[in-house]
View 1 (cartoon, helix red, strand yellow):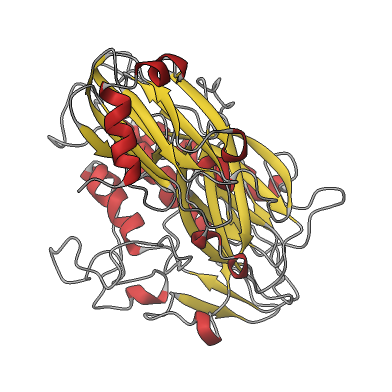
View 2 (cartoon, helix red, strand yellow):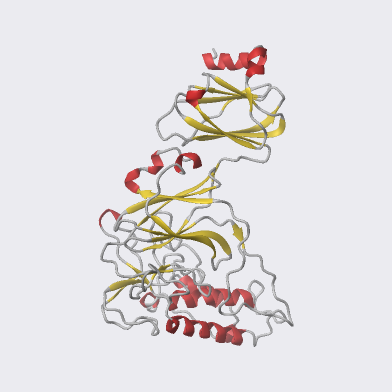
Length: 452
């Protein structure tokens, strides 16, 4: 036996012509917001005819609600079931298709109608956590575009210079970062853009710009200040207020953590983490290309220039040294490796309920000890260095011509003295993958080695 609102909907879709004429129509490719307090119960909406119509619903209210959504495409009736405050239906619709909303009460909700896929969406791609200090964090949106480059050809085979300006960013969606302590329990709220975007975000955004990382991904970048030390945070990125990415999680460092953050280096585009330097001069709260000491950047740029010059002595684009790799691949992987070893990454052990298993590749650095990079100053504080992933070195070895003589330490013979070993790859000879974690970091804030 049909329920009362199913009976009403059957009536609506067949015999209730007066009600059908009175209902509000939802236009195609539109997003509408409604408050249950201003709607009749049940409320009905006309839908456009389409060979492939998508109707999506997003709950915007944070309080518990009990609304139900039913749809007729002119011949059949469907319930749009909500999960985490979001639901959708896709199929053909006729001229008398309708949507019925029952029990909206005081809640606010959005209805999107499209013939080009769902407007509301929970994205598979996640935000990216760069790093944190005691009261700052660097975060990135999911990729919104990829770098477009033309492969160089012989005899005019050219490679990017060691340093270059940031290319003009492609058109970007509107991104909003939502950040809150874990205790705020954001995951218990509707996981919809309109619900999360209405929340007050923790901290203060000191920087937000489009950034091209070394992997060729364009992402939106945030430097957030004013966070609390040793605190677990939950982060979401909302795209155009309707698409949700996340959550991811991270923990700020302890109040005694001494290392400042560095970011936005065009010659090391994926470097966005804490480094063993003294605090930057006021008013800067983190280092970037304009404030980083030149005695650190100049030698790195010279190494990069020298390597590129040597690489181009090979007949790039004419002589093949690999069916899979090119000189461009070699330079890109060398840059990634050079940056990861040139910028030591500060970290600290997890403790208490945040303890990791397995433990990160940390190497204690006593106060006054010479850093791994001799161009870095000796600092008068103790810190832990997060070692580069061994796979960063292996990537250069695989991508570059043999005559360059690139060689990585062997896991069986003290590779763990200078690299994080066994996290991504197992470390067994000839085996790729099957490491203990399979990655350098995860969405839960664990960072096992510096994958740059």
